Image (cartoon, rainbow, N blue to C red; front, side):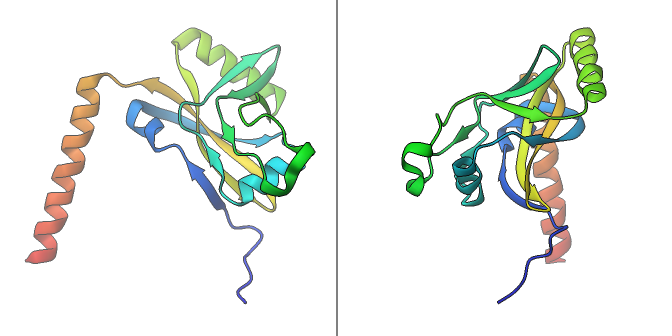
Amino acid sequence: MAQVQQDEKQIVAQNKKARHDYFVLETYEAGIELFGTEVKSIRKGRVNLKDSWCSIDGGEIFVNGMHVSPYEQGNIFNRDPMRVKRLLMHKREINRLYGTIKQQGLTLVPLSVYFLKGRAKLEIGLCKGKKNYDKRETMAQRDAKRDMERAMKNS
């Protein structure tokens, strides 16, 4: 049986819609405050980041709209799948993010959930919203790149 390295990132879920709808300016890593059955459910990959966002309230940062499915064997210990979860970051980082968000009108969006050294982590992106023409431009660039790679491969 192959043994997994402890220092390796084990990505559980990604928010692909976030990269489609936003320009990601910076990324941050935050721990997630979870209960035991939630951790077990996330290990099984039963987490959904679609339509989730982060908010800062009272010097603390929270993730809203992150769906963690109830653990099958969890019975009475299961929590509400849509509950607001607190994120663990340094106070200095949170204050800097809060100032940036208020000044520049940016938003915090969860990009992925992964395990690092046995701990559940959330990758947060400091994002700026894309307009429709930006989305079309990104899709055109991706298609052009794909066509060039296909032409290079065939020749």
